[in-house]
Image (cartoon, rainbow, N blue to C red; front, side, top):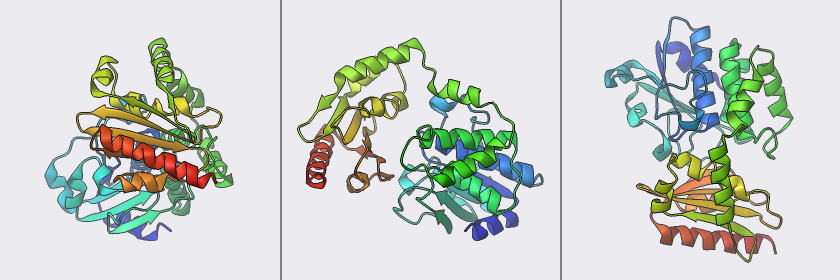
Length: 314
């Protein structure tokens, strides 16, 4: 599956690894993990990881991004990870690289690079990177394994989501053969400070229920600024406050920003990805996102989700 990308790696002395903007644990885990794998197995190669800041995942070892000059791309291989659409890639300089490749587990939206491997059967991009290492006979270490395991944990919802399969546990067991502290991973991911718990409580009180099994939260820009936390916390970290309500099959969290309204869509039953794609977004069958123009477009999306859920439940 990875033959073309592996050959490109062997043929290039400089490799630059990209992922999507506003990274989650899987984006960073796959990026950090692949960088460590390549540096461990090809010590003569120069390997960089680039992109915007890690945000709440800054606790991950290796999450500080490299700052590199534009000229480095001229003779480099750029690898894009965990990204279904070109508009979502952090740092557009990948387009100027000599050779490009992509490894992704999202639903295919568009061809982005010369060499591509996309497979939605994997719960995470970290799972795909682990498969890449095993298939190509590359050594894993505690550094690469810890990063990849972190991404698998976050994108599988602690191995709870239905994207989790026997293959997930096979790959996780390979990572666990390396020596790393899982307690430090879980404590950083899920041990919240008191202020975050208070924020979650406020968002629970904001939940709105519609007639046909769809819940939503809408946070305008003024309110978002009043919380004094980053956009990721308000958007992606709060969407699953609606995730365990009986009778709710679809939920969406809208967050106003300077660059539009972030929409995080989730479902425990239906494929909501087509709705996200309709509004220029993408992602997975039951976890997708999009950036909308304004509140009016957000309400149009909400109405589409209500209509879709009503039709699917017939």
